[in-house]
Length: 292
Image (cartoon, rainbow, N blue to C red):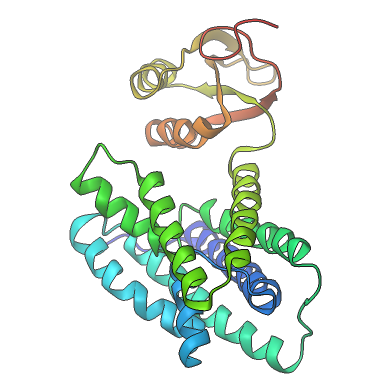
């Protein structure tokens, strides 16, 4: 077994800090803005909030307990490699939720004003927290695992659809249990805003992205990109001005939601490659806009 070096330890510490900050932001949104204004929550947090309001059970601990069966299924049927990250993030989120519950109950004032404004702020904070966690290829578990399990059994059903359906059922359950139609409408605002924030963190703000890739394995990378996506690649000879070293530069334009997958493809072939990702605010041609 390879002994972790200094770079591995620093990367692990960086990821841990991102997870803690992300979980604290998410927990602040739930305890400081959602709960005081009766805004329904989705996912395992939503189920935990329902049980918290009915039986006064701790949100974080209940959420972690609900995740345990899903983590077991994930171990056997999905991926053991990503299980550790999911387990750690779920644990951090559990502690963060209960810690923020205590702090808001005793020390920090909650926001009890305009519920629409509360939903907007809640969405921004939740999106920022989850987006930070997702940038490390981690997840907090919950309905994400359900989505992946169903997709594995029924490949024609996408993960996104399953997650959306599961989240919708939990929000509807909240509305029925507490007889509050408004809480579900506010939850839609939270979901819309948080999704936009997550997309901005993961993929940027522009309509398209341009990748410039410098590597000694340009041909292999080009073939992998073409085979794994619908995007074309151009290969341009390039010479380093200082080193005089000749390399090939790849240029690829893609939509922002495709960038994460393309970067993984490139890194799987050449982890030392030099990549520039820039905005492409106007992209014309096949696969993008056809006319100005």
